[in-house]
Length: 372
Image (cartoon, rainbow, N blue to C red):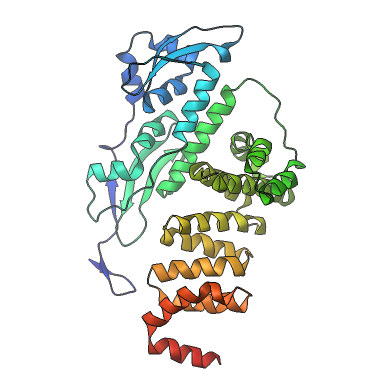
């Protein structure tokens, strides 16, 4: 047992092997048991066929049209239902990817001594199935010590260690890239003139227009980011892309499409890194966490936004709320004081300030007297 700086006793950090958890080879094993598996892979696309199994779509037939393959009609059933449905191959691919990119629950907290089932739920069953499809080899998870669990895995010829959100981001980008490659060949170009138009659309509440202007950008940009040209992109161009992805992410947030918004905003952060243009991205992510009641996660995002020059009048009240909800009343008091000094409306902070005052008692009054 070890003690933290707050005097709380926690378990030491330990590494748990994921051999029992990972699902390597599940798709290949399924293929050995399934007639006409190779033909389905050739027509549907190997990964899209795997996506169909993960999402509960069972393909019954494909009337393949070599002249227009994306319009080939596909018959399928959904879940355990018996009702046959039909959709064009290209549309079905889009639906499968949309299903995989949305609707997954946030990871739960792991207990001190997690069981294999606890770890499966934490990583997410669909991600355990998706990981081997993209060559991601999950090795271990590091837990305990009062710190965030970290996954260890091999991907793209490198060993990685990151939290579960980072691992999911990699898989989400890989899904988008797969879909972008499967779409009919169309010229794609970045038109920066669309960015102010999208920002203006957001300002007037026309979020569908923003999605129409920029919705096709994330897939190609996620592939471009991994090229030498993407890594060497000058700061001015990266800042423009960050603005675009920020506008698109905000539109998805306002449309209540949180999963899509988060993926777009995180892609923007990858382009922006420590650029001041990234401050709104961190701010949007942080405020969305506050709205979901995930105050611990929001604190780091809001601090990063402030560090990059974000608006104190908007961010400090949100940060103060997070500290209050996490019972960190001294930090909350400092945020409230700084927010008011920066021009925030004191009336909007009255409830938070009252909660801080009740929690700190005489210490609050002594602190305020020093400020006078």
